[in-house]
Length: 223
Image 1 (cartoon, rainbow, N blue to C red):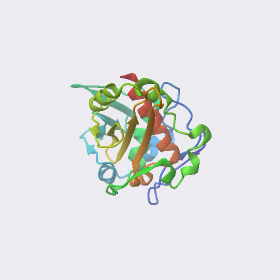
Image 2 (image 1 turned 90 degrees about the horizontal axis):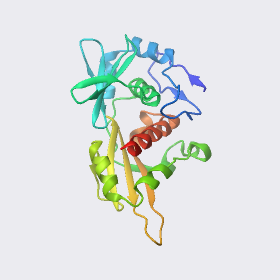
Image 3 (image 1 turned 45 degrees about the vertical axis):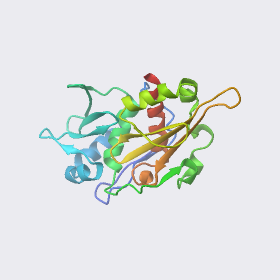
């Protein structure tokens, strides 16, 4: 996996990593350089960029779907809120994307314009091995719209009036992802489309977006 290290002495730029083919449950971890960059960064600016809060411990806390994450650069720990308790976030891809979100996010508003993957600047990336794998979601929910709606609501999703059923999920405060589901029947197979706010590429590079979709798929089908 090729990593492009950030130069924190200059204006912060997006961390990019290629061939993000390792899914949740793998040995993928947060590179030490990313932790070091986060530790040396201006945490007050990061809090503004990421819509996070800074705790007295130095942890950065921000929303993730229907819960919250607590990232401590000093201790290199990431905790996820479960009810009243905080438990270690053990999913490797969640850990990596959470740190990248803090490093990459910028203080820009949503464009309020939904776009498909083909409209992204790096649309060519999402082909072949990097095409979004929607099969697990279609297998699980393609004939169960009520089940899909229930899971999305559990994850803090907001229904939108599109397709047969559609929801906006917000995995990170500045990054909504829209799921449009068409139910299958005797004549037509079910269909699923993912849309993003046009601002998504200000926060994540193409492989980060791809990794985020993989993470969300894994979370959705676990419910």
